[in-house]
Length: 260
Ligand code: URA
Image (cartoon, rainbow, N blue to C red; front, side, top):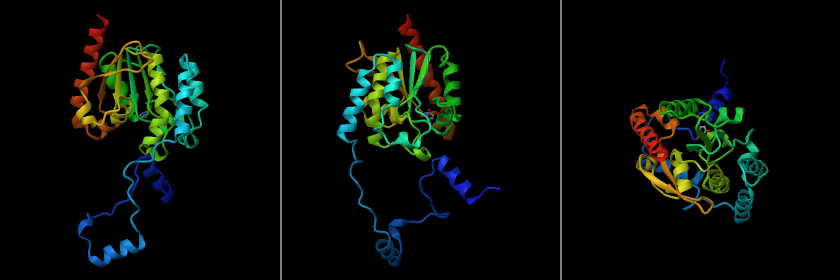
């Protein structure tokens, strides 16, 4: 039998972050007493215009550690020894990535979930299975020619979205990882990876399907980069799968061109 605690845990695992009532309520038009009561008992917290940035000392520590790495093993150890991001405290595993060295295609997702945290491997849950299927459909796999990693290597509690500070603290490690892997093509799996790595504000719906160029001082040449819908989104919106299929075909055509 499910206890209340089980149900609440299930909600947290599913990513629920707030509770809502059973019937819709127009909060712009509440009876006056209710508005006053609400103000007296639960004063609305001030809304921060921008989320707090990562402290400078932690950011420079992340940057200096990541830049020391001369190969993947070194980068993995440096990341595992980095305690500047508090997500590490609540996660069981540090999920570095998985795939072949110097891959044809590098897929960068957002952050691990419960299955990934348990196994220590990226994209192994339901959305990972869909990503594997999408890759296999165009001859790509983490075993043969691709690599999969995430912007955030630690599972955020309850699968909440990572904060901008957490993203900026993990970014130096992902950027160095991309330099060391030097893939032929970079694929942002979802909007978080696209926004963080290209420092661009577009939504994933606008960004997907277009080619961009990813360049950092540590890369000998820019890498063609493209964004695709996150498989977790496709599982919720299967009607978008046809666009995702089109994007996978575009990736495989580009790869064929680059190999000519
Ligand atoms: N979603 C992600 O973005 N990454 C994972 O590893 C799993 C789910």
